[in-house]
Image (cartoon, rainbow, N blue to C red; front, side):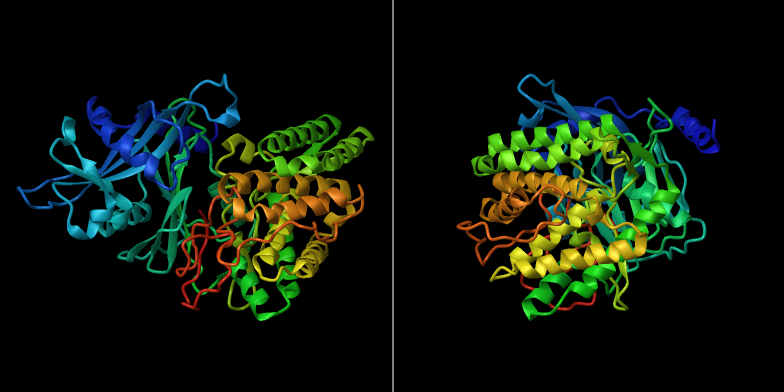
Length: 543
């Protein structure tokens, strides 16, 4: 057994220390039934909550309470709660119920001061917290500061384990402030020096947003901010697969995310190809470092055919949900068929760990011009095992190419040639840095870009129908392309209307928002087209 595994096994035997009061979760359940579905990060919206289970409970700070009318000193309770719900439509009509595990940080007081009114969860009527008020702890500066102190000092309270890079300097007393723009996670900025991403829906196994930046830091890759501290929870079923709960990284103050920078360029009529080329180089450097840091595999005929079959299945399912996609289905299938045919002909492709959700909102440009890549969590809606699976690097390339398309369509009038130039420049930069040009594998690139566009169509139809014309324009372009013809040029899809001038994508479709949006915007990724004022406090790493 490795030293790390031995340490985790010992911690798992230590478990949660004193067992939580058996009435704790039942007493909180009525409040959680009301509060959880209203949270932006709750993944099971639209489905009833049928039950709760307590995975772990750790009292990080006891609540001392106070006299009647006194808010009292706050307590901090950390919970991992299993939430049972019926399966959604995507799982099929006969699918069994699903259970997601959520990380909750609950503040406990006798009463809430007015400044914390928005954090209220509710008043507990019975059980060990009877008569007390529970609330979202991350909105309480005192408790948020305590969380940073735990990360500074390390240790293993209960089921939790706080760790840090011993060479990193984390000063005490940094003022916390929450970022309120996220959907899948929560983030706190400490003194404009560090940013803590708190994962909300968690699964056993190292989260890629910790695993990959740590691996890149060991290889000296400076394109990704290195984690300085993190915390996990022991998994009693498998000590080698803990729950990753939070990651602290440097906050890249003064950086500008690629989405906002692209929209600024479009609004001003400026060229973006130099930035796109530099971003291609940065992406290639990250891929090269990941290939060295972590094992690679080879995709042969069986794996290629399985990938193509899954893409075709997603296309057919999307067409059933979005009638506008139906006329394109036969032509789009040819992209997946050509990919599978290359595998049957003996072509094999390397696969490695990749970003998994790359777009302009996941890249930050420093004032000096250097690009950083952030947010390696992948698509949170996907199972963790799938997000940790080696994949062709072209998946990330396709994601960025689609992002240029979204940026161009966010501008009125539409700038299709702007997107084409950026796509080519990105691939040029990638090829120069890696020695491998993604355009040299046209079947692979077209298949992955088509799969991404199909995903976008389904997302927009469900959530932002005014923006459905954006991916449908790409669908038209990709369906018109000749197999093996490289990156298809933009062609007008005819009567497809553009999105309304007053709206714009808030982020890359179906992907988690960036955890450090610019202060003037409440979302990330594909955000509103009007550039925000320069506040000098633009994003730092992770969500």
